[in-house]
Image (cartoon, rainbow, N blue to C red; front, top):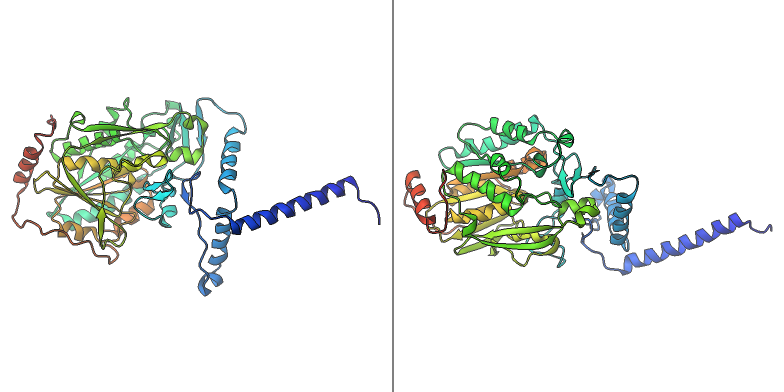
Length: 463
């Protein structure tokens, strides 16, 4: 037998090491506990698929098994972190500008998942979270600020408007519909030479409003936000707006609704510091890590009773308008405590006026300000709600219906589909509401009551 060459010995040594490592990793796979979420990637990890005859013969079982193994191998979080580091530091880099071709942020964890405490505060993770990804062309990082590149179109604007128009047809004469299309930070902040990378959000919003039927009131949030663009109205590490940005959209809504917005100085201002948001976790760019955000929120005075409902809507539990325990990567969850299928907020504003906000997580901070103007505020997250929105409006005598969407979700088929789906629901009954006052209220008396009830809360008049 001929002696092995050095090359053969090295190959044999590699085989032994590889076999040992593979065996150890295999043993650890079965010994170590499996996490349900990835804190590094801020998303739900694949679960072990259920074996059935159908899934086996259709090939779905083995596809699911592949995903489960890929998402749950030992020390995965460390490997992923290293991968992000290597990806960022390869090649030649600009100190001012960066670009990432990546999936949209709504494929990540819902706002209510507390990655600091390792628990979900309100709603279990749902498989739909991956399917809810918004249409985007990537992420630009400019001057330490991350911004999604908008890729909407006139056809999607028309589709979104058509979904809202169906509600107007069903509710005409019964409730007033408002639509708020919210621009993102890339509409205001990138230098001129990089704006050509994104479609015009202002043009798209105008197209949405131009396709809405008569009777729907549009809210010019764009102009109100643009007038305050030099203030802290968008996060640098997250795709959401700040509490201040949402406030200016609320002011724009009050103009459209002819009611008085509560003044910032009439509310209690609080701040949560060192917040790293969705776009940081999506890119892992070190410039974002070195420039964390702060989550500011303003607490409306008065007493509010909040009830939140899970997917079955059968029984409500206590909730909070401001989840002050929210911290770390979940700090945005301070607004409403995160995402719930349905919330009901009863206030001490006794004017008989009721509103429902139909939203995704972008609408959370916006909704908190409405307790200054309405006796009852309902908040519906169309991504998780299974009841009938029309029945909710009818059963509770709701006066105003607000559809609020970031311009990305307004241009994404999945979001438009879910908004339409909840019109009549999926057969799940809405929770029983308290007995309603049967005394009719005309529009003028309601408006007078609104002004009377808020005049002592530091509200400012609309010019």
